[in-house]
Length: 176
Image (cartoon, rainbow, N blue to C red; front, side, top):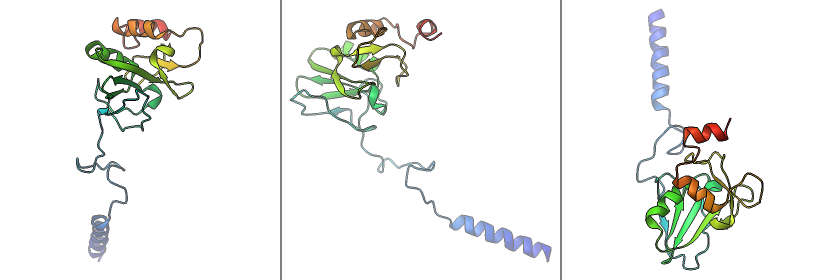
């Protein structure tokens, strides 16, 4: 009698688990999306002949340098070429490194500021050196002027020399 009861209970439990349906959308609750279900992520925006900053949504574009999705929009940057092609970056460090190889026909560079959350021409922004930027370079664009911030030219020079938070010596000095 005990064995029959145990068997029926186990059978009922297994049947209910087997017939349960996932109530989450694809890609949620740990499920994965098939490649056909994944939204299309683009590397560039074409036709920006007005050379203005393009408002984007998180995850809509991939970084032209590291290919990671551009998700943390306050650290996002854009480079606009003469033909209107606009490239996006998840971190100013990625854009600076990309520009070493693609500088020729760039018309405008934009950064999103962490203080005003606006797109600003990169050369007009000031830069913090200790920000938790997506790729760990540590720079964040700021519209306001405060002590301790560096210019675009100084930030660019520091990145090209490897003097970023990715360098353990620099990190130790800047973040005691």
